[in-house]
Image 1 (tube, chains in turn purple, brown):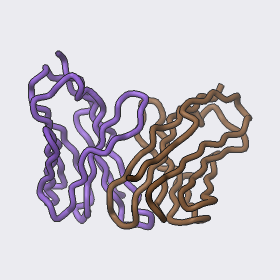
Image 2 (spheres, each protein chain N blue to C red):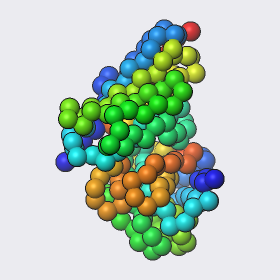
Image 3 (tube, rainbow over the protein chains, first blue to last red):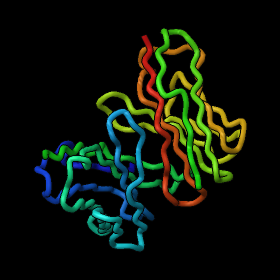
Image 4 (cartoon, chains in turn yellow, red):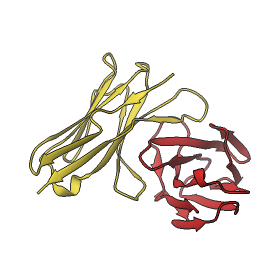
Length: 113
Length: 112
């Protein structure tokens, strides 16, 4: 069974510190991995989609890396700000019909001013 | 550009009442559509997905049903709500293939 794990479940850092969020997956034959942000009571916002052929993807202060051999993806957020406080989720699509995503449990981030 | 709309945003329903949540996507055609539920303190659970009009796949046995009467419309329903149906319901879409998944703003359902 395909599984996606995010550890830690919660993280608190002072403003300005770099954030490192981890995502582990069991299916090394993935074809992409997606990172999302969720603010309390809101839907999920797509941050980055990294294809299996890529080792990393960047958008502004965000950088996501992908290591299929170790089954890991890491989301880096540089120079964190209080506005980065949210829950971050990673997800991997299945190869079954519908390309359904399997989600990790998320990491709840608090950036303290 | 593509957008996804989901409503109502919030609703409070008594046990045993019916439910209808609606989701529509604009700016794309023949999307894959999904309904997820996020219960308090729990992760995202896929409820239904659809790869085309009238094609619905159910992921878990439950008190809910889904329908896709039009290409860009996805409806989540129940004939009689249970307390356990409370949660945050999210509609999502993606194009064919393995592209990005995009979510609506969600509908918070409280069953009393």
